[in-house]
Length: 145
Image 1 (cartoon, rainbow, N blue to C red):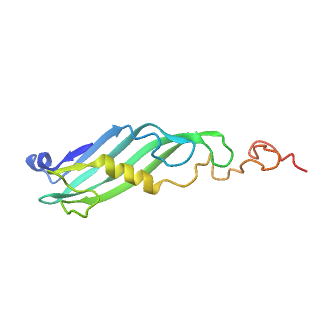
Image 2 (tube, helix red, strand yellow):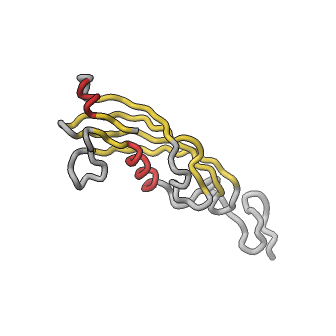
Image 3 (cartoon, rainbow, N blue to C red):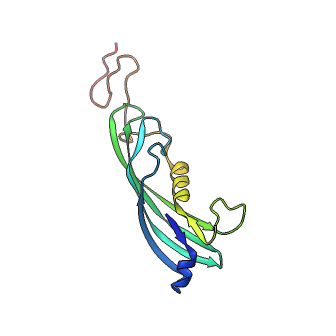
């Protein structure tokens, strides 16, 4: 998704809301044995802060499908991440305004990567698998002696 500051300025507005969906790289989550399932839904607002700068904020939501890190059960979970970035023409800005355009996909992808948990659990109190007998401790008692 590209946000065009020229179009926003032409409309006479200083802010505007947006919504879009896009398909991110399935492996963006970085968690082994998981993938982003379906589109990433993004909603937010762009607010002009200068001639060639704007603040972009909102939230991204998506589902991750994969195996629980502890018990290996197939799991689907919904994630919602908030973002807020100041974009300008400065060369050291990680999200520069280029030709009065902001490339929002990069901001969202970076937010997902940095905010994603290190583990993917079917539930917070997942007991995992017994290292001795291999039973899923969420479903039955350990058979080890």
